[in-house]
Length: 260
Ligand code: ZN
Ligand code: FE
Image (cartoon, rainbow, N blue to C red; front, side):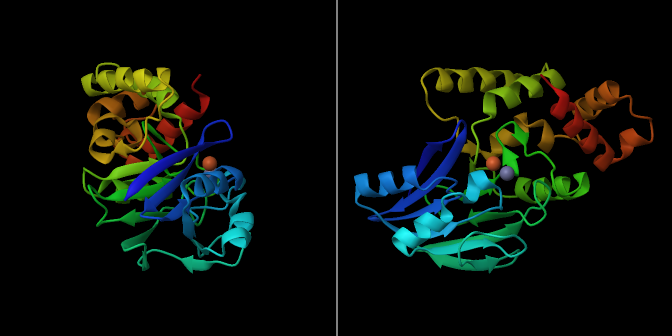
């Protein structure tokens, strides 16, 4: 299978996954770039996968569904602007010869789901919407820090060679914050230089490797002593709060919200 990141709006990627002359699109916030890619490459749209209800992820769903008849899959707990098959944790379905497993990852929104393809070649693929970004995570709009931490924990447990397809190109700005949290993390310094080079050439920094994220993403590292210490210092956490994983994670997320 081939993965294509179609740029949309200022920093979204609409992920197109292609198999022979068929394709699946994830989170089409806009129909136009998807219809153009299908036409240019002579592809038939087999399915539309939706991770959560925000407009930049569902804005093109109705038009694409009407234009192609493609089946829509979306989170059981959220609204999607077209007839859709509701899915949740534990569900699995087959599209274009791939098994797609559904993971509940609440936090950014209350019903956010992710789609995991364990048998994709050359390595597993994760479409995680606005839950996990390279070097960061989504803002907590509808859920709680405890939910977001649990969601990120479940993604962090996937195989290290998983290709992480995030819905936004936020990597370099996320890494600026990550370096403020962990200035002496050597892998992080190297990864920042690598991503800056990609962006200078106009290339996406995604998909990211999950194994890399575990080494550089502070939101997957909130239990590491260095991260915990930096957060405690920044937020003035008490000794007791510093031992509370959710309190540390919540303070880390708030730090990022205010970071410029
Ligand atoms: Zn969103
Ligand atoms: Fe988004």
